[in-house]
Length: 213
Image 1 (spheres, helix red, strand yellow):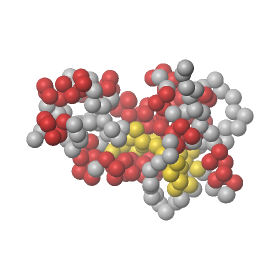
Image 2: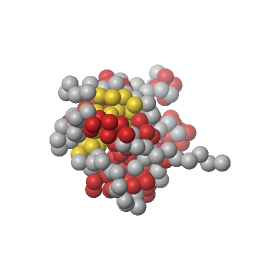
Image 3: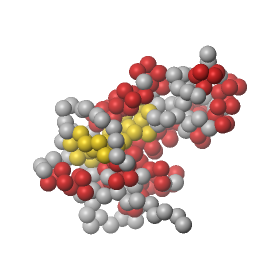
Image 4: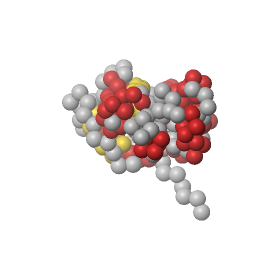
């Protein structure tokens, strides 16, 4: 039997609103695990959606549970209703230089800096973050529990998927548009045959110790 998909809520956002925080941003990242391409973070501030009726409102959930078509629809809805949206991108060269965790935090800060009005409080998916001395709450599995974090993961996912499709056109032969830089068997075979492209993360396993030693 298929497990029901968990629907995130705005409970944490409403709790913070009750404490006087007017603009609560959700932040999440996409692309920590791939061996190619950037890490991307999204930041989203949503209005209170109580009583909000829209056929695509059910798509405001964990981006990993959505199809490509559903992701696009959810992204369009978020961009229509959000009070603020930001996207931060850190490329593979910076990832190799500073490491994936610092690069991820950098992407999150860039995304937050892009909000039209600064957030009063930040909700982030299980990731300690400091940003402009604003309070930040890390929520385990926040992408599945908190609507603002779910929305930020959707925005980041749609943006990064588009980046990887463009990189596939620039660096053909690796399949970047299909596997999005993750270490699939086909991807590793292409790297073994062709060597790394300029967008591969040379500091990452599994191919650095085997292919580039």
